[in-house]
Image (cartoon, rainbow, N blue to C red; front, side, top):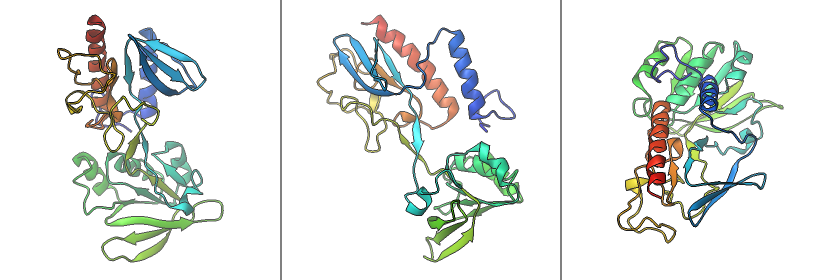
Length: 284
């Protein structure tokens, strides 16, 4: 549930918001290429060419990259083998009802992990939030911390790391390490939801689009002073705030370096990027 987006006092699910957004975009005339992914982008003269996974290309004078980010993996081999069988990356709401009266664990200390814990607590007998740090205040919204503190069946375990686990065909146990003492304990667990940050979906982009060390796209004032050879802006045409190092290519939302990682800010950046596209087209 998204509870900090303006206009939805009781919250709205990500699935419902995405559905309503796609309907609205269709009404405005947007066209969709479904069941395909972008695999490359290049500039030829005044046109951008986006290659799709089916081998076709889309040509445009401007492109907005809003590919978001994917959840990081735990990197525990025993648990990777149980992915989808008790181990889930992200807040999988469809599994919640199947966990009634069972022990559930959530890994992460940010808002997404807190929201998952709150949702799962409606069904599970107990939900334990595993946090590597020494508090929630540095990474989680205050309103969400209060909800977790008021919930009778949510426990917060600090300085905790998942180092192992297993089960016969499905998750049955976890090995948890206390990073302060180094002690490892085995606990029964019916499910583990992992929300430990995200990695940007930028592996398909060319080197001409500059990224930071983590792969997030640099835009506007964050771009290095030295422009790549493909940059034809000239001295009187600096990059716009959401424009990448490839002229006419913009980046918005979680994929962008320095983004706030909130739904409202991502939506706002999208509308600002569209305005910049108009400015770009007006000057080309």
